[in-house]
Structure formats: structure tokens, C-alpha cells
Length: 383
Image (cartoon, rainbow, N blue to C red; front, side):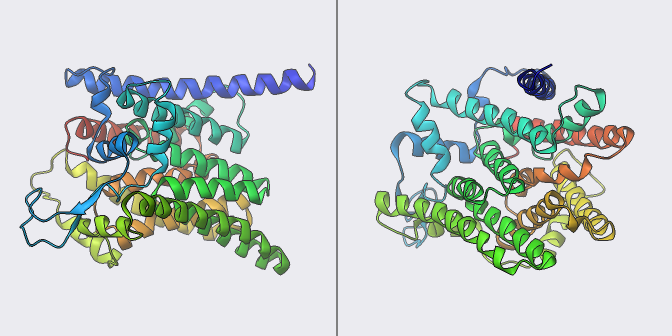
């Protein structure tokens, strides 16, 4: 078998593995919708609160105006309203492809699912998994059903943000820093917390080079920080051009309780919301956050005891998960934390060498929580 045939077989096997995992997730979503007597093909079911903002931006651009006398605000309210609290990357992609598919609701959902599929495929590429086996299928189902996976399918920029983040992981491991920087630019243009990706890469370089005594190689942080910063600058430039205010993003977002918070206090406030005498499906939202926190604590112990910081991918993944877990608790005010948690997908890199029986146990937990969270999404409990 020549080299081309070997590569083609590898690609085909990876596509088959990804297709199997993706189809299983869609069957689960169809099942949840069937319980609710809803149709999987009703594109409006994949809309939630922020989805409307993204689609409105794609159609009409940004708007920014005083809230006074609108939406229940008193006439002397000083808050600002509009849709400048949402970054332009995802709406721009929707607008770009709307010349091909005019139904932007359908288009928004298709974009999310395509990049969800592509993200799963990228995980296989990063880990060089190419064999079709039961264990590999079970493993790929872990990221496929990761916490908050419903948002990988919904009309949100979550899956496309993850795709470019994972592409950055792949390029970073290959030490192609300018291309890694480009991924940082895209991610920081797509999502407000996307700038954290640059810090994960830069910290990884810093720790690795200090450990290896290559101080001069710290210059590789420059393209990563430069490009990541440019993504944010471009987003704010668009706000300025369209609504003539550089601070429009912060002014709109300030209404939602964003600012500096004590993360421990936030976690405590979250736990106090649970009524242990009358547990309900809604409490699964909090259960998900609790499991993620417990998982992170266990991961941290494992990471340092096993000295996984000597491995480039594990070091990068740990820094990424740490930043993207802690930052929302510090600035987010415990608002829609389940969406932020869906960005923690690189956590699964640490699970690759688990025994199959442990993977199956974890998968059963993810499927159970994912099923309930999907139910809550389609019944408009989640936003």
C-alpha cells in the first residue's frame, strides 16, 4: 500500500468514526424532541435568546440605544440597550453564506452542526486516532456528548469557536505559531472570552521554554498575542463603525451583572439554589456545574501528581481548561454558566487512555445529563 493509500485510509476511518459519533448524538436529540412532540427539522427550535441577536446582526447590523422607556425600563433609566453585547464573527459568517442559503435560521443551525462535526474530526487528528474500534467510538462520544453539547448544535457560535480553538491546538503542537495566532484572531473575533485562548498558548510557551531553558524562544508569544489582540480590536472597530461608540459592548453587557466577582461566593450562591427536598430537572443545571468543578479538582491532582506538564498537549489543555473555567466564574456573575462550560471540551484529551469501562461509565453520565439539558433547552428553560 503506497503512502497516498495509507493517508486516504486514515482520513476515511476518521470520517467514519466522526460520522458514527455525530449520528448517535443526533439520534439522541431526535428522541428528546419526539418526547416533546417536536420535529428535529423545525429550524426555529434551535433558536434561543442570544440566537435572535446573532441573526439580527447578520441581517441588519448593530444597533445601540438608551433603554429608557423601553422593555420595562423606567423613563429615567441610564442603561444602554441593543445588540452590541454580541461579537460579530458568527453573524458575519451567517451573512456571508446567506447568499447560498437565504433562510438564515436554517443556515445558522447548519453552520453550528458542520463545525460541531469538524471539531470532533479535529480531535481525532490531534490525537492521531485512525482505527475504527469500539474503544475509539466510545472515546469520541465523550466530546460528542460533553457538558452543554446541545449548544454545539444550536444557533450559537460555540461549535465554530471550539473548531478554531482546536485547530489552534493542532498548529501549536506542530509549533506553527503564526498560524496558531491566526486561530487566536478568529476565536477572539467570534466570542467575548475567545481572547483567553491566546493566554493559554502564551502561558504554555512560557512554562515550556522556562523549563527547557530557552528564554529566547519566548519571542514565539508575539504572533499569538498580536493576532489574538487584533481579533478583539477588529470586533470593537466594527462596534465603533456601526454605532459610533468604542464602549458599546461593555455598556450593553453591564446590564447582565458582569464584573469582578468572588468565584467561591458565586459557587456558594449557586449551591444555595438547590432544594434538596424537592429536586427537579432544573437542578441538573447546577449538577453539571458541580460535576465540572469536581472534575477539575481531580484533574488538577492528577495533572501535578503525574507531572503531565511535561507533555505539550496536556500542559496546553490544562491551562486552557483552567482559564475558561475560572474566568466566567470571576466575571460572569453565574449567568448561563452552562454555555461557558460547553467550551471546556479540551478536558477530554486527558481521558484518551482511560480504560473502556471507565469511559463507558463517564459516557453514561454525560448522556444522562445531556439528555436532560437538551430537554430543558427545547422547553426554553435554558437560554
